[in-house]
Amino acid sequence: MSAREIQDRKAVAREMFVQQAVHADADVAAGPPRGTAICSARGRRDHTAESTADEFREAADTSLLPVVRGDAANLIQVLRQLEVMAKRQAPRIAFKAKGSILLLDLADILAVQVEGNYVSLQHRPDSYLVHESLSSMAEKLKPYGFIRIHRSVVVNISAVEEIQPLPTGEYRLRVRGGKEYLVTRTYKHNLRDLAQLWVGSERLRG
Image 1 (tube, rainbow, N blue to C red):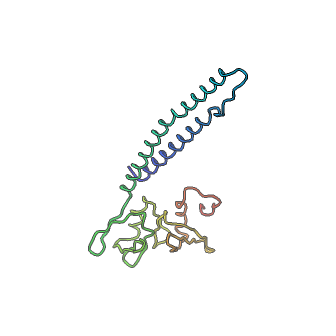
Image 2 (cartoon, one colour; image 1 turned 135 degrees about the horizontal axis):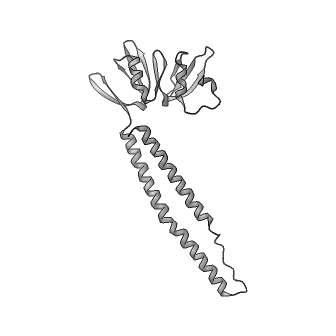
């Protein structure tokens, strides 16, 4: 199961939990108010009937609780299992560094940048040099949410926090931690992948 499928299942489970709670509240609220029974001139018979009705409503409302609690417990258990699966299946990258093979979560890599004959994995607080071409790294990382923004830079979509248009038609990106990268006009079309929803930013979609 992919990380995206796990996230989709978590979203569905949360939605079911919310709907269950809303329906339960609606069922309880739909019943007549439990006001204090007032005895009329008809005497104790009416008072007894009203008391019996109140007891019936209370019993009906209480009977809903085990069902709601049971469903909620099941949904919480499913969410916890999905959380564990998401952590277990988070994509990682393995590479050689200083005679060892290191493994890093891809989500923790902010960007990949050319440095001579190597590429530098920008990982807070450290960076790591890997003997690989940027074109090769860009292809390998593309399915995991990385986009190329410059002939020498690939960034992690989830790490981008701000986009600033420049008078030259280029853009400047700021990632987590404050570091900035230039987006050249050749690669600015890749900015569309930074978000699923754009509001009032049609220029970026052109």
